[in-house]
Length: 325
Image (tube, rainbow, N blue to C red; front, side):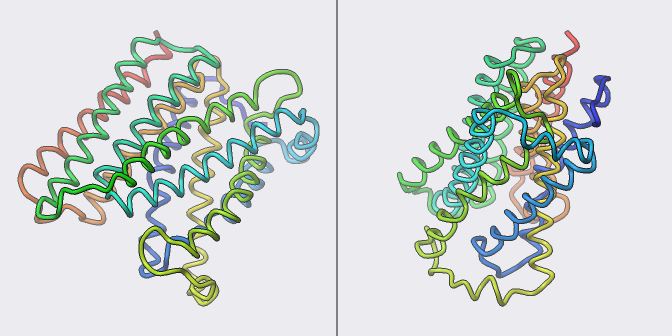
């Protein structure tokens, strides 16, 4: 079983998490015209397959499979609940973006999730310098707000009216997204608990258990647009199905590396989760430099983007240094 023993390796794993969580959504852009509800089925399949693949490859092979059946029912229940909560939050985030736009949904949803997740994880397993974590998290939260302001500046000609329903869904998404990770932390604590490898398949099962009714409901009753027929999924190009599966694999890779690093006493889940939320910076970098989402934007947008990247760099730097002090 792979276990990192040096902080350099643990930090590398957390950076991998950041890049995976910030990059998986690129696979959505590679399926233009395909409804997200259809894409999501393959995303869930990829997540589950990857949870077994990473566990077998890094978690000790046969030892990994044996470990799936030795934990207590309580530990398994916490892992399943984590998957259910995450899936609900993930799909609510997409719904909130559809209603309120990225400039509202992201700072409310991800910003709130960052604060809640770090606080709860630190309570469950205190580790690293609390002051440095707090300042770093504050800077990252501010960076997320500035990022949203940049998107708002780009769309300055659009209506500024935001439906109350969009704000409420964003708030609910933020609470759920901040709560799912502490459930994973709890599933790996105590006697006969799950480990960083065996917890992921149960998490993936929880995601699937929630996705089956929730994604089906969102196909029938989409927040925006027309209902999605199953033919939209079945008639898609083969390459689109592969991109959807790859999206789930990439996100799962980020979760696996994050959990492996979080088990180190020096790091702890609060630092690991906080650095993982640096994925927002990675996602913004993809949008700015690869997809050119901000080309021909006003100068004010460029200034905001520069400030956003600086806040992220300083905030994530403080969080990364916190375990050393």
